[in-house]
Amino acid sequence: MPPLPEPHAIAVILLTGVTLFLFARERIPLETTSFLVLVTLVLGFYLFKYPGIEPQKFFLSFGNEALVTICALLIVGKGVETTGALQPLAYLLASVWQSRPQLAMLTTLVVGAVSSAFLNNTPIVVMLLPILVAVCIRSGISSSGVLIPMGLSTLIGGMATTIGTSTNLLVVGIAAEQNMPKLNMFDFTLPVAMAAIPGILFLWLVAPKLLPERTPPMADTAPRVFKAMLFVNEDSFANGKTLTEVRAKTENRMRLERLQRGDNLSVTRLPSVVLQAGDRLYVSDTADRLKEYEQLLGATLYNETDVEHPVTEEQPLAQTEGQQLAEVVITRGSPMHNRTLNVSQFSQRYGLVPLAIHRARPTSDVAGELESTRLRAGDVILMQGSAEAIAELRGSGTMLVLDGTTDLPHTDRANTALAIMLLVVGAAAFQLLPISVSSLVGVVAMLLTGCLRWRDVGDSLNIPVIMIIVASLSLGTAMEQTGGAEYIAQLFVAATSDLPTAMTLSGMMLLMIFLTNVVSNNAAAVIGTPIAISVAFQLGVSPEPFVLAVIFGANMSFATPIGYQTNLLIMSAGGYRFSDFLRVGLPLTAIMWLTFSFVLPMLYDI
Image (cartoon, rainbow, N blue to C red):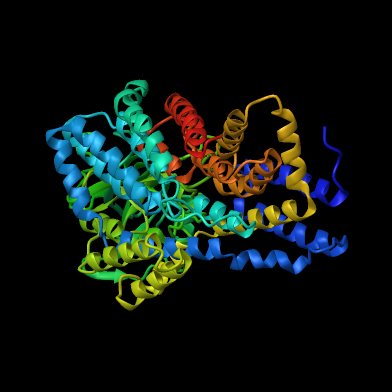
């Protein structure tokens, strides 16, 4: 066993362990943990000095080249997403699904993987989900065998280039800072392509058979909203009461759209207005609630379009014509994420009525009214409204709408956005510009051409991801400079000393696979990179395959829905259970791990 390192290194190792534990806690926001880690490092090294580490050095993580590049690529990718630049491809896939579903399945997996090598996989999944849900409904195909394989194929493709995921960029950047040769765009595409072949074949031929048929969370189970009128009688509770008192009687649940007095007079809905016999309260809600309001207020309930016949069992509430249902999945970066429907004034902004919610995580229950429930990424809200309102929400590009249609946002700037993205990737691929420079130029081009607005720029940046990267970079710096990374590497080498170098490399990858399915893949990768480089130097071999082992292992977020944010979206949209990801994710992980364990030693002569 190697001797214990000095106290600063031990403290950083312990802090790393606590950080990984907190990252795995659902109730603690990731950005909160990340900020606490940064403050702890700054304050700790200020109070307990260490040669060569100034506390202010940790602030440089905010200006790290890899982080700047990631943010710029997220912004450029947002331009491609909001302009609908990939819409023609989506329509092509939809048409193939109708005629040849088996070929369409393979095409979808390949397209998802290849696209994810150059774009963030979240917008790709957001684009494909409504398409696949719609074609499955229309073709009578179960979506259960389609959505998870599609999502996992994008994770495979994301490994193939330096810009495929933020994890790749971070690891490549950290390795370069530690004097390793710079990895270029396609330097590790070959091993990924070799491992992707059995992986994609498994997702195409085997995975759909492993997945049981699941019903989407809201299918045919949620209530409908009806427009109705409550007539205030002489003996009604509401007669002579203020509007505040009337709404309090319904526990402030009643949605009053307008108040009419007599045939033509509309009364302003002020809280102090006093209701009179003959007043008409126009409301919209579910059938059960409307009948409850009728009893509580002692009023008479009518259909809005039939004010002559009260609502009875023989004369039930009639569904408002032109109304449609839509399932809306909350995504990270959307205006609803970590907010309530009330605070964001959702109904007023979009003209849609929320009916029900399906939580992405079963432990996160709905407390109180739906409108007051804080929404998380992956939650599904059932909405009702006009076709125009649903189309407007879908076209805004701020949320994922699963409404059985294939419409996607598309503008006359779509070709411009796609051209800019291709130039950004091409300039980096042919080494005309560093990816950090070409991506920033791409952001400017998106803004100048009108493909993006400054509001879109803000929406594309994910605060939790930024804070996780900053905290992870700071921890990595502290571990490397205090000797903590070298000590962990010595422990790893000691534990694997009797194994061939190829098996040690495989073990490093397996460790990353475990961490990435429990905590953030960025956190696992950034902490694992200096350890992997130190292990390689102690073994006297090239560090490049060990760095690639970190990249590949950290990207294998296959086995749990919490491993990656797109897994949560897919779990919500398809009505999957936690065990469904294990059914497919574990064998896929084994296939990819074993293939990489054979391919990397072969390519790097280990």
